Image 1 (cartoon, rainbow, N blue to C red):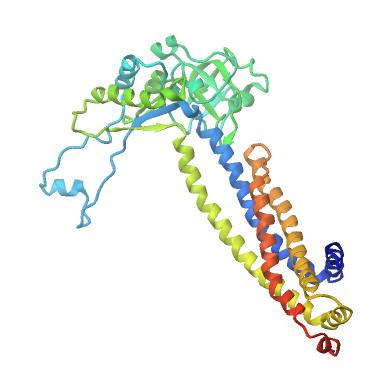
Image 2 (image 1 turned 90 degrees about the vertical axis):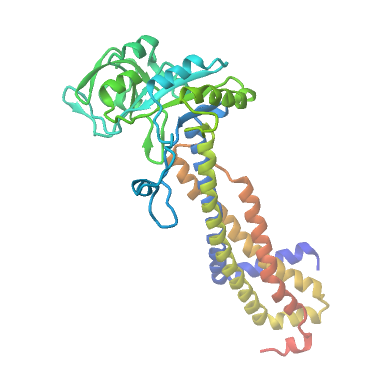
Length: 426
């Protein structure tokens, strides 16, 4: 019997047992859907994280203060408690916030071909109002300088960014996010310019509007307002321990390591650190946040693999049982084929092909459902369509292996049947 005829016969047999075939296909499809769907969603999240958190690209880094982490001894008491008990400990420089003077001194001393931005966090619960309109207390206020917009991957939709006069004087001017602009002035980004809004009852003049940046994990980057860091310190930040962040961006990635070394060498004397003291500030590359998040997402990938493996193992057992039942039901047919000269190899192939066809049907349906479900996350996250080419290949390969393994024993059993006993089987 030719291979084409064997495959055709296998297709006809699969069609004739629709209920059993459908159940097995559904189980296999569920396993592949879990694999492809979860990993497609993860690819969409990776794309969004990369866009959102690598705001300065691969050529930037941020310096911020290092938090003082409390350590505990073997007796369960903290170092602070031990100090109260009279134990002498060296006073730590950790936990000292980066002050305005230190940040500005760094900006003056850092003689390196790079752009430097200073920023400070304002409040996260500001209320913005205009006449009778008012926002919820969820508006975030950022204090920055003239480079804040560029270094944080924002774009101006209209107007201008902050300038040196705004920074030095600390006057009440601001650049508003697209959510704020749209709420009070409509969709035209030019309308808010030179208008006044109140931030926590303090009037501010709008000098620019930002283009939409989207959201990440439900947090909108557009529900924010930028003003100068001097203004934030004067009016909008009540935290006495508020610390500055220093962002640095070099024009070429080849200069990044040199810029980091130079920045640390310049900033340590400003922070009054001795040669033997460890740095009380941290330097994070722009892509370090993304790398951390992607490492965390790998756990979800392993979870999807475990779910898919368990499901496909059950599907393989079910498929093998169906093929064994099929061998029993078609014992007389197998005996007849052998009696008229059918070879063991042809019978083996037929049952293997049937098993692989059922498995691949499950793969096709599972991959399609997985792509649809995974890309539903792309719609929510507002990213582009994700097609998991790698998992498409792996899905087909896995299902082919499942079909081969599940059909191997039934096909061997069918090919080894004695034709005389098979013909007499009732």
